[in-house]
Length: 281
Image (cartoon, rainbow, N blue to C red; front, side, top):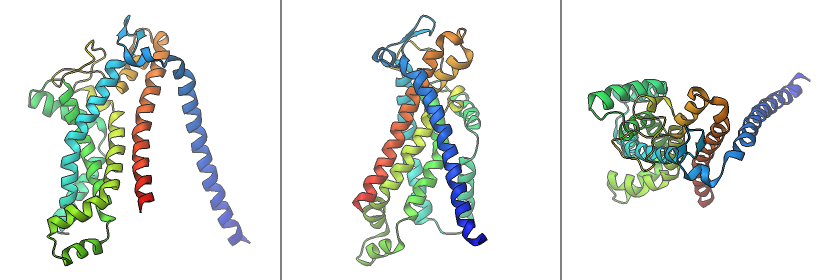
């Protein structure tokens, strides 16, 4: 009798846990949408803030977030992918390689505020880049690097060894085998990990707090050597530091909703890549 009840108990526990998570997620999303949707308009996403940030839009914050994410991708993706290829395809399985992998996984668990302080010491002060968009982008690139290495290496590991052996058997070199056979098969998994990592980086506040983000910039175009606005920091300031918090609360909810939409679209892109790859297979 107990053996029959055990699967039902396990199934009920899983169902209850899933329902609880979904319930709280729906509550949070409903709160954001119900309070943020009235603030959404074309003016809100296409104009500059005005009247002490109590009116106007969030265009500079949107542009700053997009540029920051692009710099992060340009910095982290090439180095992360090349490092993962070396570790998985070329490096010998010895104590040194295992130490390197352990260090990468430990770096992925370091709090983001530590990366912000490191970026302040290295890029802002050490390399004299100042508080700027490029300093913040390089800092977020360092933050994203371990995640890209890990996800790319996992995508490469899913490619069967027989695929590599077949390419080598017909006369291809190891480089040609990796370039023409392994990488095309691993690209969907690599892109999925990259997009998910960038969506996480787009919502970070701590790493850019010390390296270049500003409360208000009246130039929406932005330059690499200047400070910039960002959606997560803008939301933080409107919610906690503004002199008229109650007055700007609708704008804060609208900013939060825009940030959620941006992150959702990035995640949706990753899911689409995975779905398209599985369908093609």
